[in-house]
Image (cartoon, rainbow over all chains, first blue to last red; front, top):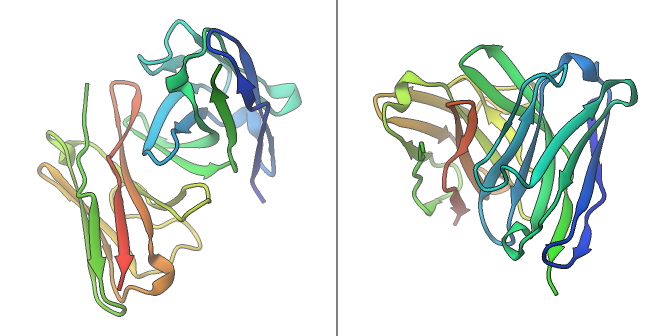
Length: 122
Length: 106
């Protein structure tokens, strides 16, 4: 069965850095686009970033562009999110998710991990 | 940027039908999907491509999308359906989520 397991969250000071990882299993990781989504405490879902199966296509939300970097290692079945210049408003549970895409104009998130909490505070 | 708006809350009696709307400019020209999130859990996809149910999702969940509004309908609502629900569309190479609706089963 599909499993996505995030790790790397924790407490970090404003301006600091953190690297999140997502270990995938139960499917052919290299065939799928992947994404990061976050959810601030008591708030809704916010899309963060998206990467194609080969890593050649990457998109970011405006709120993280220039500070966060998504990457993947298909040999290790792993997805990453390097987060720099962290701010208090980046505090959230970060989920990795598998992207379903049936056509060029259709994208959805068919499997989600359990999430990892990132807290940015002094 | 594209925005999707949902009512903050919907209440429904057990066994009745709950309808959750998601409004966005010409949303009917895009594909809508829906996620269910129970407290302390990760979101689960319940509807994709406007009206398709993933494997394992009960038939009481259905969806439609036309004009500026997508709708998630829960028929014969059960207590286990109490959760937050989010719509989502794909626009300009971005995932756009709705504001979320809390469904309460009274």
